[in-house]
Length: 610
Image 1 (tube, rainbow, N blue to C red):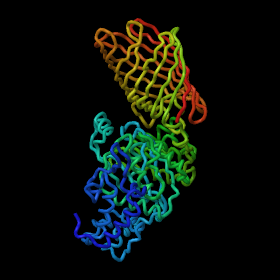
Image 2 (image 1 turned 135 degrees about the vertical axis):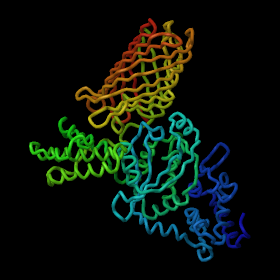
Image 3 (image 1 turned 90 degrees about the horizontal axis):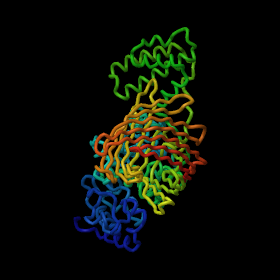
């Protein structure tokens, strides 16, 4: 592969063998080696990343090939190993005390120019909140920003790792993502472009966790990011994802950190923020509300008439001059004008109005606002919500008991991820539920045998309230195995798939009220047809009372008109009380009528998050 080896290179290889550098944890980090079923293997899947044909599985072969490559003629300097793999080259030169004067390419001038241009000062871990309408972002996302000496956070550079795909069909997207069919790449871009994407378009609040990395550590981090440019790794949603692979950059920046060894088999972005916290990396945090959050806050300061005026002006239905109505107190006029400006920018970010219309209307609103003078707050102190890392942990174990008709039982449930409707919302989005592979068992004392109660592969609910400015559609989808009451009055394990869509509103003193149309199909059991498909609806009221106490009153009726024809009516009242961040008690009662069989049960469970 290489021209005749330089005798000095052979000497360095012998020195590396003697020091056993190929097994050094930092070398393994730079090459992304992790234990596999047959030994070490790199999680990088791009052949361009390895200089040895055996490099993916052999750290020693890759190290020796790298040393030899450092002594190849310069050629295109940017493609020389000293520049292309600058982080591993820098580390080898330091560990082997390489005489730089004997190297064909003693330093990478291109990287040096980039470093002088970026002038890095600090690095932050960024967590855009969960985006439940996107399968790839429903658990949140993390990226890094490198703040520069230019001062403004907007001019920071964002380092992002993500799957590259044009797939738009949700189920295919999810399944292919689970099994690593998408390539993952690092990218660097101005931070303000990511802010526009997350803050303005996707309505996601952003949390910024500044890390205590020194300039030397940031320089090493950037060197590894530089050598990962255009390098492919297979992207897996639940382990080798945006947050896990990003940790290789931090591990490369600070030798001995090993964050990638502290992650669980399934990696949830919010958990990686907690790993950074536990390792003492975070020095301060900042919250950057989305434009939707700013609109909602400003709207909360106004009366309905003023809110509707701001909306009407932003939509071009009312002239901007109406904002300067002399009969309205100055303080309220300024807030109304600011709300109109924020909402107009939101509409533009969502591409609901063309550029020319936006410019003309925005200047009219700014003109009206400027005529009001400096009165009013201008800059608003939006209350900071609970940080995501302050919320409950992602895994939950539940243990409890109940009574069903006259039969008592004990039960346990294990949930690997993530957040349920009845869990404490502090740090999470109210009305959102994402359950993944929750499994529950019960033991009925009368029958004296355990029973698989449910295995929910996925159970997602998004109850998004509508208001004067936003009109989202609430929806739900669930699939998995669960016990269902049969015509014979006993339980049967069925596979079911259900989905629904509807509307929700947040009513003062009442809570979230929702209605949904639903469809459901199930398969299995001991009925005549062993399958059924039906449709119906559901409605409910979800109410939080103070910190930690929640009530959920709901009703659901599905009429199965195909297969085994029957009706399934269910009424339920659930309550939960959270004590601390990672403990809660939940109780509930449910009444059902399936076919002509009636069934009532009550439960009490103790929940621990870990």
